[in-house]
Amino acid sequence: MGTINDLIKHLDGFSKDLEKLKETKVSIDLDKNDMMQKECPKDNCLAKFLVNVKDWENIFRDEEVFCPTCKESDLAKNFMPSEYLEAVKQQVAKSIKQSWTSRTPIKTDSYKIDVEQPVCNYLYECNTCKSRYRTITEANVCPSCGEAS
Image 1 (cartoon, one colour):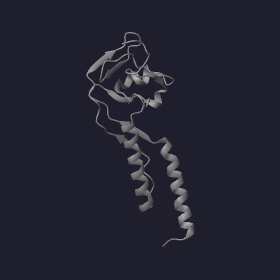
Image 2: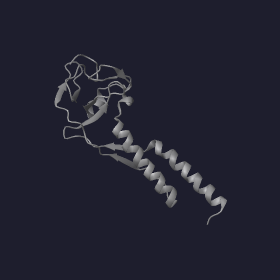
Image 3: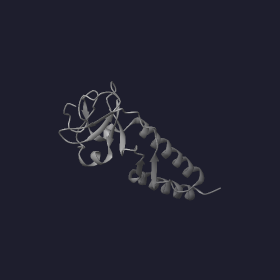
Image 4: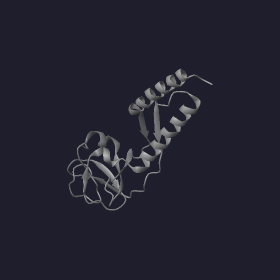
């Protein structure tokens, strides 16, 4: 059994580890075409689609991404699929629990998301911005620039 000082020391280390979690890298499995999943953040839509990872980094804008299905736009960060968020939450919760019970540092090096990608049969390359994306149903607009597909 430890002392109050031991507990305070453990809590201090635990707090620092929690702070480090903000900087933890998350790697996402891409499909065979280097595409990653996105999800419309609008509750009345939630359409899933895939975008080329290089296009997401080089063509898409952080300020505005369009849902190819409902045409609504939002910030790029809001298109994170719910499956990805849930996978990270579960991994972080497991790391925190292990850390607390074993009194070891929280795993903060990286987490890996490996979820099943939706089957997207429609492949597009936008004539305007040249971004590449796939959808489950026919697209109405390009998710990068919002131009009609």
